[in-house]
Image (cartoon, rainbow over all chains, first blue to last red; front, side):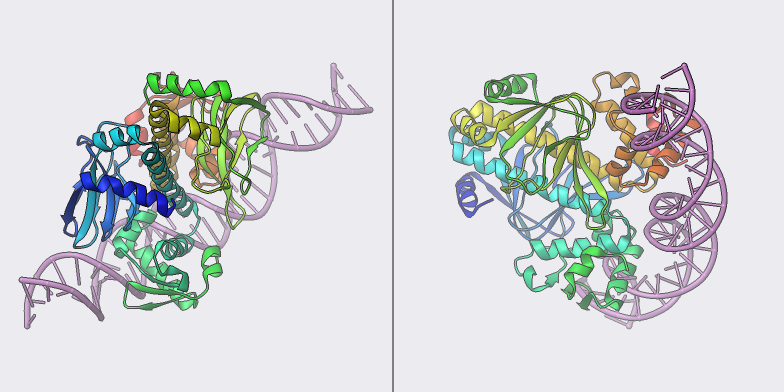
Length: 211
Length: 211
DNA sequence: CGTAGTCTTGAGTATCCTCAACGAGGGTGG
DNA sequence: CCACCCTCGTTGAGGATACTCAAGACTACG
């Protein structure tokens, strides 16, 4: 997604509805008519489903600039919730956005690209979930967050979510997530300041994971 | 994706290149220029990547009618291979397809939908990977294959891939996949005719998984 | 200051991976 | 036609890993 695409899509903003959510509030719910496409403006949100066994699986972690809500069905097949206070979301009427896309090829092209972007996020998460050990999963998660953070290149990351959310994203138990983090800390691959501030010291070793 | 969308996209076929692949042959390779979008015409293909530890992860299983090759980057970030003999693939020049989409909103809309379709396949796989036990994963895999097969409603499925491919799709070892299948058989949830012909007897119990 | 939610650590158990062996089927070549 | 090889599929045994249940620290907030 180029900056030009982002700029083109801003022309939708005149029609958009900006909504504000508190932590834990539902942005859109499963099995309700899929009226809108969304862009996260600020804050953090999670897109999740509840599995037959009652567990929650987070399908996507939304950071500012991310588009979501794409579906082929008439209803959403997921629930989206704000993960922090003061989460702002731009809501685009699907009908109107599609009409604009039909009228303007540039918008259609930009829309395609943000959809491919969502595809790429899902692939990345799939690769993380496919890893064997818990330490590998948590390590890859930290690296992905660093890659998606604005200032992540330096190795400093502020985790956008709680350990519980990390567990539901990685399909692990909270305890295992916590243990993996302390393990990485003891092995000198990361350091912590508080529970959310992580500094990545050895990215390549994090990627490998196995001791 | 409606039949109308499928019909609209067939107008791209006049420009398409139909290629034929043997089992195991590479359709497109990682880190090569992403020139084409693809549609699987007949046969089966797998889209996969190799992880840092040398394992292979299958990111998507392509059945007839599935589109693939979408990426935001200039190069493919995956490898696609035919999984059976006589696999036919329609290759659409990305440039020309985009030009046609820009000229014709109907094509652009249909293209969006097949991209959302790919997104949905990925989400489904993510949900399967997130399940806890191996039996649950294999069970959900069988159900998904039944859902995607033309005559799967009856509960009869022909598995399109080997146990090894299933293992790489589910991020399990081959042995565990095999054991899970015999387990499901002993518990009376499925029956086998040969190794690839599965009949699903109790779909709901398969979904639950846990004994 | 108390309470609720978050985070961490411990102990025991169930699950899955690894290594290993063996059987079945399909091709090839003598 | 048969021996041979190769891939695929299954089963067994042992060890590593993650889950569950449980309890205790830390934090934020009213």
